[in-house]
Length: 208
Image 1 (cartoon, rainbow, N blue to C red):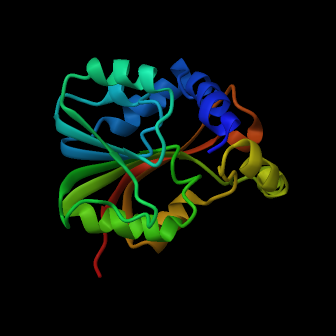
Image 2 (cartoon, rainbow, N blue to C red):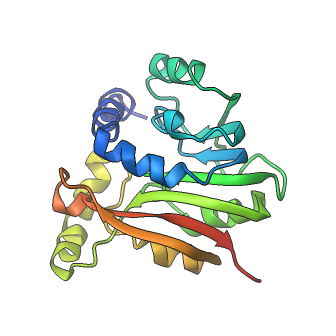
């Protein structure tokens, strides 16, 4: 992980994704969280103030530690226990089957190299009655914007440290065997058009 990815990019994202507009989207996305909860792609801990009181234990997972002092301060202010883990090189989640009531991803599925494998792991560790809560940016429904997302995606991969502009989040979730009883498509007013499209909702494990 280079200097830009470790120091510059996390600060840019902490500022952009820490805005009041994004915070309201986080609050709505995390409202159903309860019980033992796993957050994949913890980043700098921006979700912590938005978890409801129904969460009893939060386990957070990220391949890298970014802005460590800022993260420690946010964890210290959390009203529930927070346990930090690192993702191993194989990408397998270090937890047993049917372990969590809730799994959370926010602005994470855009960056994971093998989304299908990652979502299969989410299904494995999620209890049959559990939910996956997601807030992700992704492919636009506008053909014009989507074409620009495709054109700019190679550049975004570089400056966004692996982030993809054009992933159809709902399709990827359904392809991985999730049902989507709740799916909201919203937009960030202050973001560039290629980064504006949001997918927010609740996914549940389907049959099979």
